[in-house]
Amino acid sequence: MAFNKRTKIKDLLEKDYTGQEITVMGWVRTKRSNKNVSFIALNDGSSIKNYQIVADPNEISEDILKKATTGACLKIKGVVVASQGAGQQTELAAKEVTVLGEADAEKYPLQPKKHSLEFLREIAHLRIRTNTFGAVFRVRHALAFAVHKYFNDKGFFYIHTPIITASDAEGAGETFKVTTFDLKNPPLTEEGKIDFKQDFFERETNLTVSGQLEGELAAMGLGEIYTFGPTFRAENSNTTRHLAEFWMIEPEMAFYDAEDNQNLAEDFLKYVINYALENCKDDLEFLDKRAAEEENTKKADQRSEMGLLERLQFVVTNEFQRLTYTEAIDILRNSNHNKKKKFQYLVEAWGVDLQSEHERYLVEKHFKKPVILTDYPKEIKAFYMRQNEDDKTVAAMDILFPGIGEIVGGSQREERLDKLTQRMEEMDIPTEEMWWYLDTRKFGTTPHAGFGLGFERLVQFVTGMGNIRDVIAFPRTPGHAEF
Image (cartoon, rainbow, N blue to C red; front, side, top):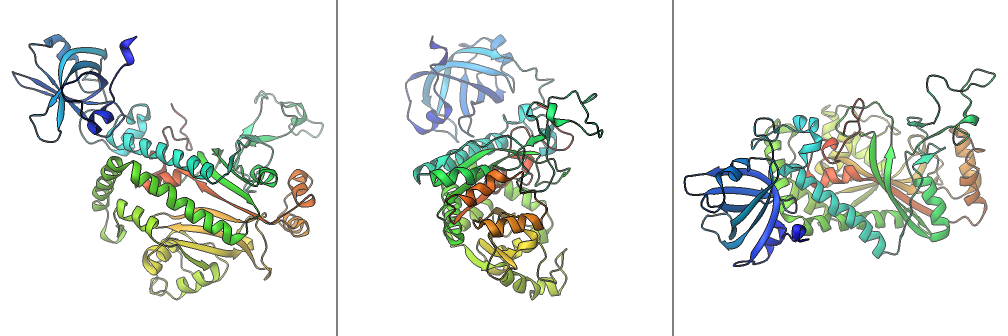
């Protein structure tokens, strides 16, 4: 019964247990010994900091201490005493040590040395035991909790939208198919095509790329809702910014216009980042130092002007600069950067899709604050975005952050039935298949808006990790579906 009456290391570091007999459990990070005593650095995942265990060979047998190698899991009963060494106020004088799980020192891949992130991706089942990934996933948890707290406190309702769907919200066509057919011998129609009428759902289905469309339906009855769930893109992309499986946060709000949408998105981002700053201090300080070391390995012109903690404070304390796409194009086209051909993609004509380098220039060089870009050309945006009176642009918004560029994309949605069907026809989106979506414009339509935030992109920004594969526990990318 007493097995789990343990004290977490986080509590040991925050409260005074001096003189008390307690039990701790955790994994050995390092062990050093001399003739008189062994010092074991123990970590249980509750904090980035280890806790020092002092084991006297007169109290603890040599056989047990030999098994306390890096990676081994121990249960230790002892008395908390004032520490004799620097670096910690207290330590645990061990009275009993039980080896819960051994780790062969010759075979355990996480030895106390610096491992490359590429190597750690190959052992993603173990990498969570490192300082870096322990910090990343504690921050990820805090951000996820903050997302739910923010929307709950604002009176939003959490909606679970379908993972299996018959629609492709983005119209990109890069989806994972869902079927129960024997792939070697699917039933065929008389024309020789796969007969999906005989499939489980009696139609072609795929994993969702977005919960937005269903979210809109819910907002038309509940007012303000948000989704937070997994989404899937079958895009054969091996960049540091793409995953095949990732999580999306998508609020949808009835009775919101484009400006309301921008106000909510700015407030939301500041809230969740500030929550991490207040609740993950030790982890973020560690990640700030890690990011600084990584920056020093880059060429001078590729280094960020701000450290990680500085970037986070920069977002939280600055009002976001708002401007139209047209104004941004003028700034970029007339910039010295563009004139001296320092952009990889030169900005020449109105209507081009902005690249990450352009977005970062606006944030980091020109305005020196986060940016909300609005009113994009309709040709480069999705069918559901509200058309502006100029018939050239839509009421879209993208939020741009230092270091990564776009972090949020959203819009006021097109609530006018005639405008929406016209746009769908222009973009070859079958209106008959989307009858349910169009119904919301037929019955009690209203101005409404929403946005999407890729959760991993947010975690990347807050942790300073350069590769999106390092902010999700088990990344799914082309050719990789281990663990």
